Image 1 (cartoon, rainbow, N blue to C red):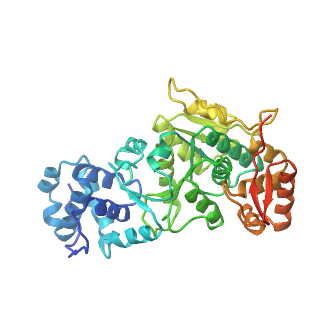
Image 2 (spheres, helix red, strand yellow):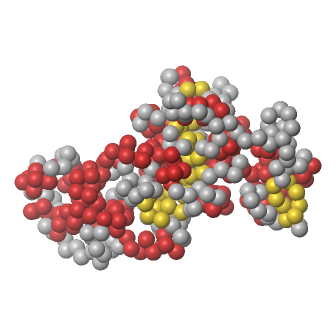
Image 3 (tube, rainbow, N blue to C red):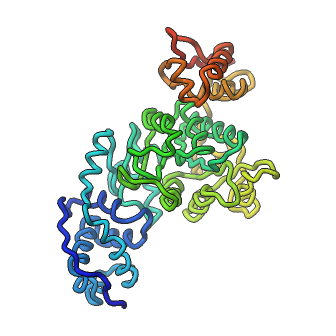
Amino acid sequence: MPEPRLPATPVALPFDVTDPRVAAAAWSRVAEPGDPVAGALVAQLGAAGALGWLVDAVRDPGRTLSRGALTGLGTSVAAGRLVDAVARWAPRLEHLDPRRELRVLERHAGTLVVPGDPGWPPGLADLGAEAPFALWVLGQGDVAALARRSVAVVGARAASGYGEHVAAQIGAGLAERGTTVVSGGAYGIDAAAHRGALAADGPTVAVLAGGVDRLYPRGNHALLRRVERAGGALVSEVPPGSAPFRQRFLARNRLIAAMSQATVVVEAAWRSGALSTARRAADLLRPLGAVPGPVTAATSTGCHVLLRDGAAVCVTDAAEVAELAARPGELLDEPPTGRDAEGRGPVDRAAALGEPARLAWEALPACASAPLESVARTAGRSVHETLAGLGALEQHGLARQDGGRWRRATPPGP
């Protein structure tokens, strides 16, 4: 075993290290997401015990990291890795005070969820030592309840119109069946899946790579706020103020796969972050589906590889996705009534009217009205284009004006 290479450093943390919730919050700042060494240490000693051990190791590395002390610790982590990890974590103890982040979370009406809480998604336990220490949550939904019946819908940021259309249809169809859509809040397929679920008045969960107070990407700020306020949740394993970067995006994907019953890849290039989510889902023995695309489309190459290798099942609509995610013996819910003679619901009818109408429908609040300018801003289109889309919706009984504002008007079924 290598000798400790750390100098003794005085540490005086300003908070109660023995408080397990505060300690869990602290570990989400001290260790990067998915750090298996930190996970094994916390699993062995508990969040508070592991944090206390780390403070001792930094204060007196010669004693705490000696061969005998590490042998007595009983952790499954190799001694050399533990010594290296302490060197990696030690700089983050300076100025560490998770109470600051907890106050920020409180100002945003958020919740800290830790393992053992009723709101902790049970699927995260399958990550073992790579499970998060805590979840920082904004929103009205209970994350555990939302995850209980959920499907991850993921794919390329640089998605095609075809991919976004399919993702929105799958998101809406799952929501109509009472299934939560889980995704990453990114541009492209993620955003389309979230919008589809919201358009069908269903909750959706966005798992973020940065802090819940730093919504990213900025262009999806309005969408993520809708996710938060429409019975869904914004979830992150890093505390408020944390910046998203590449490694955190990749680590975030394991949470998306673990908390969902199944994962569906709608579009993915040969090298795509969505494929990392797919690999995680397969490793966790979650059902995996992929949507086929044109054989000439680079955006569907990853999906075709998953299908060719037998890693994923071919799915083309929400009904097939729901069947993929269903537990043995579970009866699948059918979408509610209110469809036309062809069996199309409001989401399908709006999409059939063209892109401006589809975007306008998705941008309309589920249970309220909004001024034209607000609808245009949420849809990401000009006022003129949005008005044209709303006009088409109004002609087909899907939207109506209410005192100068616009709202949805779901037509009766056949």
